[in-house]
Amino acid sequence: MNKEESKISNTEWRLVIGALLMIGLIQIVLEWLIIGLFINPFIDIFVGMSLALYLQLRGQSMASPKRLFGLLGTFFGEMMPVVAELPLWTLDGIFNMMISKSDKILGQIPGGNLAANAIYKW
Image 1: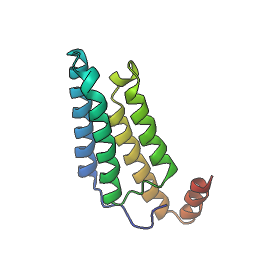
Image 2: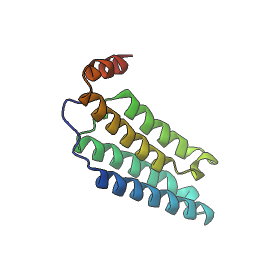
Image 3: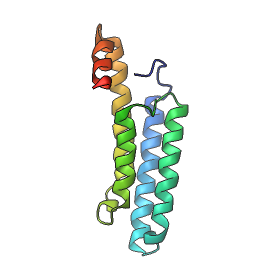
Image 4: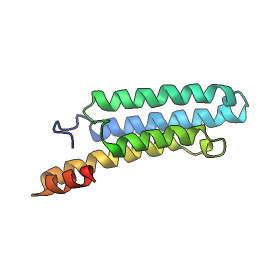
């Protein structure tokens, strides 16, 4: 668990998720225009690296297995032709927000840190 508290506010989470939703919509439009077959993999690489860097800089540890597997699952899901139509980057943003909020709540509950550490070690 990250010792440093998250610096991302609710408003900032909404903006990040909104930006990821717009990226997903743009990718769908590009896919319909056929050009997305060539451009979308590069967009996915850029978005994946940018999201990981952004979360790390804002205090969300990418060393967490949940975050890392979520990001990798989203990236490889976006590489599959049919699955790429789904808003996976948006879902990954929501997933990361939920992890952040649950970590914050667990930190406020007496003994919650012990439970969170046990989950992370598992």
